[in-house]
Structures are given as C-alpha cells and as structure tokens.
Length: 190
Length: 126
Image (cartoon, rainbow over all chains, first blue to last red; front, side, top):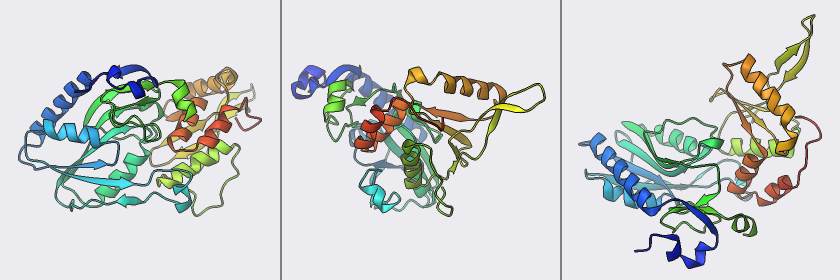
C-alpha cells in the first residue's frame, strides 16, 4: 500500500513537506467513524457528500462506521470565470434520496470560507430532514466568512496551500493519501 | 446582496470580485454601510473614522479587504485595532492581500490573482 511521499515520485517534487500523515488521517477517521456510530445508533443516517473532493474521506469514513448507514452525493458548480456568467450557484448533480424525515450528516473534506457549505446546508435544510449535522475532515478557519457548527471535525489546517486526500490544485494531487504542502513553484507554474 | 439596488461604485477591483463571489453563493451584503468614529478632537468632532468594505447581515459580520502589501498596511492595522477596542461588539474580518489572492486562485481567477500579485499599493479607498 502506498502511504508516504516517496511512494509518489511523480508528485513528490511538488510537495514541500507532509503536514498530516496517512497514519494520522486513518486514526482520526476511525475516531470520527466510531463517534458517528455511537451517536446515530438506530437512526439509519444518510451521509451526504459533495463531489469530488470528499470521495476519499467518505469512502474511508463509511468503512469506520459500524451501524447501518446510507450514502448519497451532490455536486454543485463552483465559482469560476466560466460559471459566474450563470449568475448563481447551481446543482450539477442532485441527491437521489429524499431527505424528509431522515437524519442527515453532511460530510465535507474541507471547509474554508464556508460559502459553499452554507449554500448546501440551506438547500438541504429546505428538504426538511429530521436532523442535519456537519462532519468535516479539514478545517481552514483563517478565511472563514460563514460560521457553521461542526459536529465532527478532523484537523485544523494552516492557511497554506495544501493538497492530498481529496484536496487538489487544479485537479491534481487528490490521490495522495496524506496532506502535503505544495511548493511555491508548483503553485505558480500550473 | 444588492440585486435590487444599483451596483455600488467599488473602490477596488478586488472588492467587486468579492461581491460577485458573495452573490454567486447567495450571501446578502451591503457595501460600506456604516462608518465607525475612531478619534475625536477636543470639541467632540470626529477626526478619524473607519468604514469597513462589506457588511454581511445574516452573519452580522463586517469584512474589510486589503490588497496592500503587508509593509504598507500599518495604518489600516492600527485602525482595525482601534475599532476592536472601541466597538468590541462588532465582528470584523480582515481579508489580507494573501488571503484575497488565495481566494481568487481557489475560484480559478488566476488572471485576477496575478494582477493582485503585482499591486504595490492602493491609491485610495483604504
């Protein structure tokens, strides 16, 4: 199993240092999975993730939850020079599961400004779930604009450009099993 | 959000970008809605004030953007410190040059971020 920087020679040159190791992530995900299992016993929660960054966390988290659980995914258009022409955010892929009366746990890989999460929570809340909580693996509080209560949180991240375990830079580096600091040259060149 | 109002005249391009991002995610905002007195003369006249760039009503949060290089933002930092001393009940967030640039990169606005990279100082409005 590939777990360290040296296992990824093609990408290693762009990583200045590993800030959260594979083992640390695995241990924290297991703790969160156990906490969710305890809190949601007999509630058959629905875990909702927003594509694409959450894929890795969601897959590992689900395997650490030992009570019945369902999963669904949603996808939205992020702000960019292209999507801004459409005016407002829109759902690129909606959920397939009705939320009314369900205990919903929204799972995110990272929260930064809170703008995306705030939009999604408003959207999901309107579907009248029995409960709606948030589970975030990586918290970047430095640029937070929207305060959002986090029921489960993995790690606080520094205000640096980090990648890996779902976090990307222009769609690269998501597949690293750890979180690494991107070098300035990689950050600027691409 | 100011969808039913005339778009304000932003002092800086970064402010307009920030407003567009807020609009995109459905966050209501007001541009420079309130001025806070910071210093008075002996007659009680205001001689220094500070007007944060944005107010997000739902979050009860003022946001000040700066695209000044850190070494040029001493005056603004002093004003913010004074604001927090005099109005401790006010929530204000300073978005520094690096944070604004990172935000632009995050949203794929690489050209705008590059322009910000080359900005030495702002002429007015800060």
